[in-house]
Length: 273
Image (cartoon, rainbow, N blue to C red; front, side, top):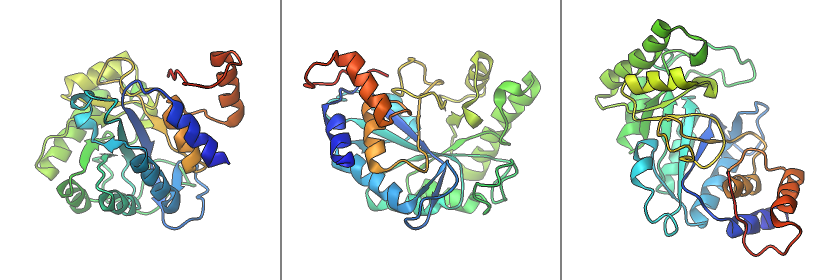
C-alpha cells in the first residue's frame, strides 16, 4: 500500500525540470545501515529500478544544462555521490548493468586513504584511489571535485578557499588526464563568496544540498539536490521525486495536499519545489 500510493503520487506529479539525487555510501546486502547517509545495495537497486521503470533517463552533472529540452518526453535524474567511498564501486556496477550514468565528487587530498574527517558511524574503509577513479571515468562516469579536504567552504578565508577550489581541480585533472568541470560544496555549505570562488576556479557546475528542482535558481553553480538517507525505500524516493523535497513523511505530504488542493479531488498534483 505504501509503495502503491507513493507511486500514484509520483505518477500524478508535474515535473518542473531535472532532479539531482545525492548519495554517499552504498553498503552490500539488504540490511539497513546505521549511518544516516548510507543506503543498502538492495535499496539502491530498488531506486535504480524505480527510476528506469518510470521513464527517467540519467545524465552526469556536466551534461545537465544540455539535457533540459523535451523534458516531458525524457524526464531526467542525475545521480551523484559525495566523498568517494570505496563501497561506491558496487553502486557503479549496478548503474552500469542498467545502462545508467552518475557523477562522483571526490576529495583530491584524501584519495585511497581512510576519511580524515570525524564521523565514527560512517565507512572506515579507504576512499577510492586514482586507479579506481580512472576506471570509473573510463566506464563513462563523471569525476568531479569535493575540495582538497572535507571542509566547510564558508568558514575559510579567501586564500584557503582558493586553495581548496583550484588545487583540487588541478590535481584531479592531472591525475585523470581530463577536464574537471563540476564541484559539490562539502556539507552543502556555500554562500555568494563561495559560489563566486567556484566560478573563478573554472567550474561550470556546482551542487548544493538545498532541496528542490535542480535548476530552480537558474544558476549552474547553485544546483539543488535531494539527499538520500538510510531510511529511503523506493516508496520514499517516489515521493521525493514527486515533490522535489527531502521531507516527504506521510503527515507532511497529507498536510501539503490539504493546503494545495483545498480538500478537492486529486486529478493532477501541481508540484512546486
